[in-house]
Length: 197
Image (tube, rainbow, N blue to C red; front, side):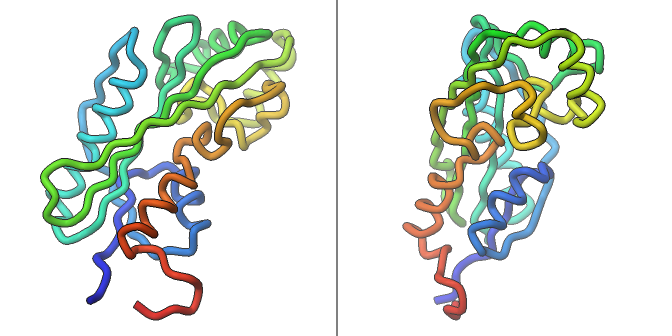
């Protein structure tokens, strides 16, 4: 029996690259959802948003297997999504210096015919270096922060800001690779290179 097509419900180039690294074919669909933010509950925020994105994608692609994700930062008890302006991004990055924060990613995994997606949430802790305004300005010259949760990307000049990590690197990029790989394999959607469907 042929495997269903796979849809990534995200326009994020980082998520596309992570899923592509598994060697699977997939389509990209960007669902239009109103995202929620619970200021003191990052897990509920990413879980709700990922689930809504998966269900919106399923409405357009009912015969596909869907992967949807949402990522936020939790810093000093506050949930941060994407900055609205460069000035806000700069303020956030300056505030991180010398502190730790946690990246939460919710992943919703939905098979054809299922009414509710399987939902998984992973967390990665990041420790930021001690740095000043000059480092932040150098970073902002290299990276566009407005489409990134927390105003930064661990994979894009992240070494300027980040001293260490506990937890998954790809989770901090927005899609935990191991979790997705295991779900694809468990559902017959991941095959070794060269193996026919």
